[in-house]
Image (cartoon, rainbow, N blue to C red; front, top):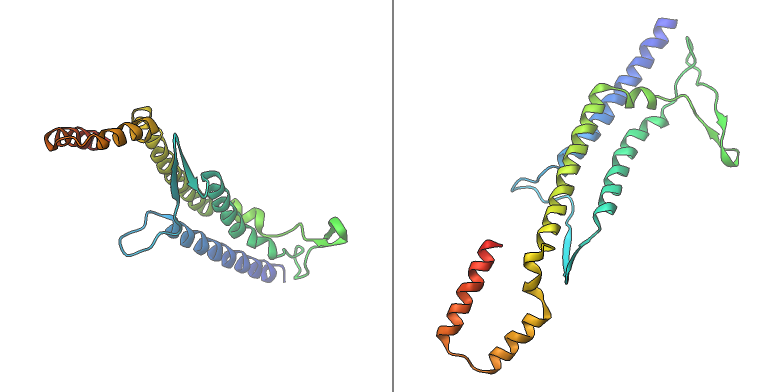
Length: 186
C-alpha cells in the first residue's frame, strides 16, 4: 500500500504544480507589455506639481500589490495537507494563536523549491523591474533640471506681461520657433 499512497500523493503534488504554474503564467501574461489588442492591467497617472512629478498610485504601493499577488498564488498550496508516511491520514496539526489549528506539513515547501516555478517567478520579477524602471525614468525625465524652467511661475508672469504689450507677429514667430526647438529636444 505504501506505493499506492505515494502514487496519489505525487498526483496531488503534480496537479498543484500545474495549477500554480498556470496561475503564474497567466499573471505573467497580464503584466507583460500589452499588445495593441489588449488593454493594460492598470494605469498609473502622473501629476506634475512643480518641481516634482507624483505617481498615483505610488510606485512602492504597486510593487507591494504585485508581490502580494504572487505570494497569494504560491500560498494556495498551503491549503493542501500532506499525508503521514505510508498512509492516507493527514499529519497532525499544531495549535496557533487563539487555539486555531495550523497545518505545518503542506506541499508549499516543495512547490516553492520547484525549478520551473522559480524560473517563472524570476521572469515575473524581471518584468516588474522593467516596468518600475520605466516609471522611474519617466519621472526623472520630468524632474530633470533643464526642464524645470518650463513650468516656472516667473516665466508665466513674463509671458503674461509680454502679451499685454501686444507684440508684432514676427517676434512671436521667432519665440515660437525657439520653444518648438526646445520641445523637440525634450
